[in-house]
Image (cartoon, rainbow, N blue to C red):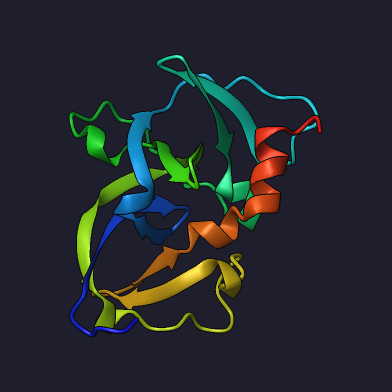
Length: 163
């Protein structure tokens, strides 16, 4: 991270009790939860596929992938749809992949100077998948490195699981 004052725009979301962020440039869109069709022989953390406006997109469950407990939602009919779960559709090397989230938080700007290396022990997620950590009021924002989570071999398994 060459420049200290470079701003990084992050889409933040909740998985379990933790707050995570991904680079906004990797996010195609955020969609509401919809029916996911299972795929045979897929890795255990692949929930299945969705058809999004004619495009077939694999849906990944990061809860399963990183052994994170799902947030127990108190389903009150809330007017505020921003804090409900859904899918974040990522574009990784031209491949679209959806990840299941518990809650969408918001888009924030973070100065690269604020980003610290991840601590050695972090709940469930291996530090190799974390780009960095930003201290917030009473917690941390964990910035995921989606290119390491979904490397070329991983993408191949997800996109053509029967192969």
